[in-house]
Length: 114
Length: 114
Image 1 (spheres, rainbow over the protein chains, first blue to last red):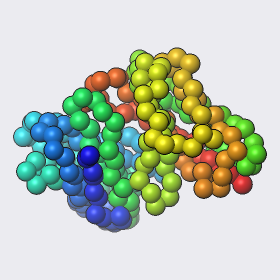
Image 2: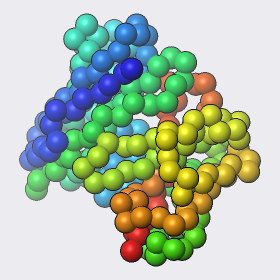
Image 3: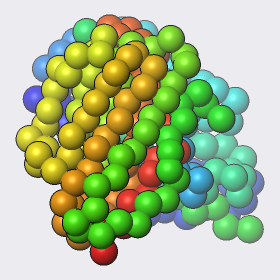
Image 4: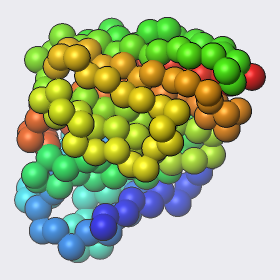
């Protein structure tokens, strides 16, 4: 079975600075998808970024980028130019190619400080 | 608004009450999910419906009863709950079998059992 680990329960970053959230996972599959979801105080889980494991190029979405290290089974999220609106819980998630259910990590609570 | 609507947003109920949570999506998705999110715990998958058929029930107590009358609507009927059932209940939907798309989540129902 797959597992997803986020070793940082809480983090903080100053406004306009850069922060990196860690995620590691365990799977025996060779191809799969990885996701980062954000859950702000409004409670709605929002997709931030996703990565296809068979693509070597790291995904980027505006200020959000990932560092995907397949051999190390690591999938970290980098937030550049942090904004107050980035304050949220961030969940890393794994999904197999067959569309099986997500496996979520426990989350990292990020606070962006003014 | 992401296209998945959950009502009510907040619910307080006594242990002997019967209530229902509602989830609605008009995204054309044909898989829907109920998750339980408790403080200090990972997201727990409760039920999965695919093409209106229940395909997974993760050992959820019978006091939780799901219903999926069509591909756009999902209910969670609650009966004789316990205080430990107090949590945020999240509904999600996705296109069946298309793993890359991930889930679209609702804003959740915050349930308090008194």
